[in-house]
Image 1 (spheres, rainbow, N blue to C red):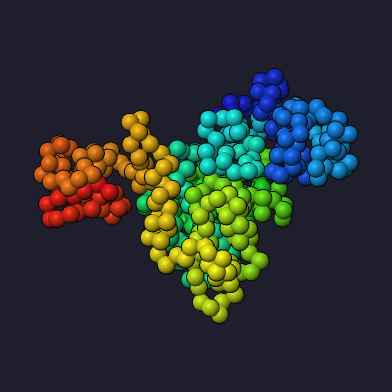
Image 2 (tube, rainbow, N blue to C red):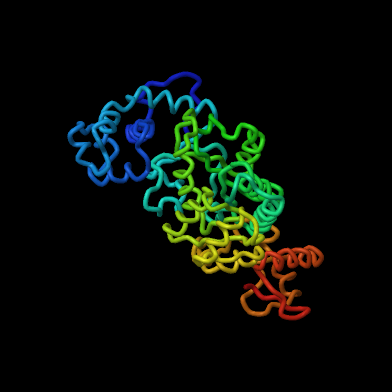
Length: 381
């Protein structure tokens, strides 16, 4: 939902009442995703929640008198309108669960955010995403693994999701950016209260090549409890979550747990057996997370999921890599059949020069979209 670029406060009537209600509830401290679900189960809509009296609110599981009073005294529509106006002035857009552009993968989890604040763009291709997370106190080995895995996955057409934190998260974003791929950073606080502050330039790069995302209002400061909460969004946006380095109590293990509860794949990168930062990953592997020795382990495991994610208008399956092909690559790929096809026929069908076709075939091979069956034949995988 694109907000108009208002230069000053607009009256609340300028905004959709349901949107205002979502923002009002999001401004009530203490109402997290699970409580929001409990309230919706009881009252049916956000508007009905805000109209309920304190006694009715106290009948909801885990809502006590203090929180009921806070909900009953939620900021009014004028306050919510000012929040939206402030967001618009800073180029921040909103998505609610009722918007068509709301991420489909995230919508499927048990407790999706009612409101998403975005800076940057979300594309349909971003549903083909992999999360890469890990410790803030990463080793050189961990940083290298995270960046290289992110780069390889981005080149294969996956969007990289992480949390913009120090250490592994930042390395994952940088790897995707270095490969020219897309990346999404999910923040624990508001988009105008960036944390950590030294990642401001990195955040700007992410917004240009993907998006920054938060369920918190733009000027809400990050609290310690908000980071475990945002981890469910990181895993919820993704087909799978890769943990690169994690100590026993690492927040990355919370993300992995959310992924498992959401029915998503969990991967872990092994490390030295005497490293404290390897303990969490090794425990995940013992608990049947997929061991990652190269990017191929991730791509092969997610292959069956990717095939069902997107189909074109004719019903043809589109893979992650296909979604990010340029026009030339698409043209050559369309000329290759699922049975062995002569390269001469690819040249004739595509209408492209021989040297362009041969170079593009090499790219498509690298992206595992085709393979050679002989020196003169190729086949679409």
